[in-house]
Length: 587
Image 1: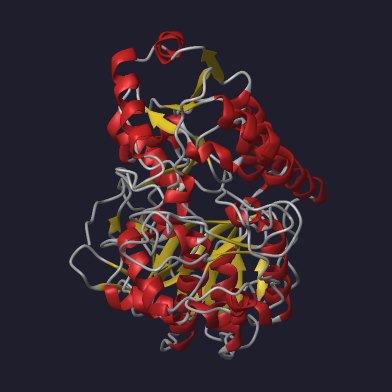
Image 2: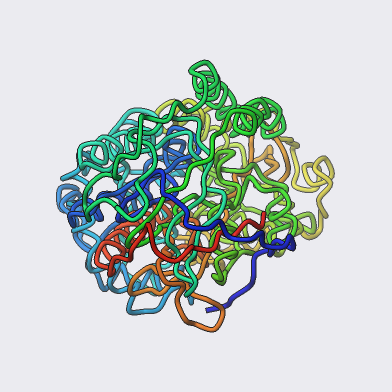
């Protein structure tokens, strides 16, 4: 697996505190409360462990903002309900093309073979699914459909039998909020303790290098005060009482922190600059009113704090190609989990890999158009998944691309608008069909209006029309290939650049290197960091080489459950009254 190193903090390490006393003590401590953190907590709690979950805000993270799509297949009940035939082997063959060397074949096969069981596990925790199959190739199905082709399966039909594997959580609008709400309810019912408005700043290690806890700052009060020195709580039980409950920050500061974060989260998603401005008071409240908190872990700490798309320095250093897109995440996706792991000795991989989305549908009629660059050359198969199209535009065509469509294609797209789109998709499609489009009676004329080489565009269109309705040279499925020969012609600007009406969402894919059997964080030399695990986008995983819709959330479930099970099975260590642990104080 390719490896690279996240930026190390040059600040010197301060002396370790002597005989620290844990304010909160648990078997397993989970840092981050999105899908990966919730699944890790559920598995650890199911194994009988006392679990504490830490989250800087109130939980949800990028999961709650997502579409709530889980990539699953191999013959799920919902595929059966839709009359879809699939097998773990077909799923493995397709995902091998997407995952590449991100994980080993054994891990990928384990994921595919356990895919149907993963959905059943989510259902047992209250997450609803449905087998209504979307008839169109789309970026996201409407509220009438909850199973769809969420990747490039149809384009890869020659390599693997295609099947729809995007299982959208059954809920109106974007379903990520419902997915997290059900997982959070399950966590709260499992006996795990959730400490919201609590940020882990440093991992604490003992003299052997084992991670034994985290140094945090919190706005919340916590029960029982510190655990008594020399008298840690019994395994599976609460922290030993050491005095009255700690007061935490003022109630008004906690309320303001919660409200201001919620006000800034949505603007941050659509207008990052505005979101950053609105979020500054949130960070100020944390600095001004946060109280120190030491959280001890007898068995392990699991990092599940998301990616680093909100960290502009890390984006500049590791993934500059993604800086023209719209960060898909929250202010909490600042790489803090990755940086905690690196300071503890962990290695990283795939930090340069980002997913840049450029969807051409809905409406599905536009998939029959021809995507070209400024020289008029064909970019790729237009029916591929939006991240694959985005990568092709950025990597090979300087981020510039236009979709050529004739009169009939534009007319069909307009007719499909209402039935094939949710509100946010409709706004984007309307923009593409109006302000984002130029037209002219001839190919040369429309090329001149868009600033595209007329000769190149004419040659590309002639080659495309000659192939229709036969086999497309770029591999587009035959039922989507239709000659574009009815003037007037349109060119729709699909370039990757900042646009509120047609953003190019960006998601980071790399993270800490983990042992694939356990989820333990690995050092650069291959050994593991004892007591430390990582999951979700804080870790390199299934989607780190190539992303398709639902694969990141599926990886959060897969890797979160893995880390939770193995951390729960680890040998406990004394967490109080023993040798003074070292606190990594580097920022």
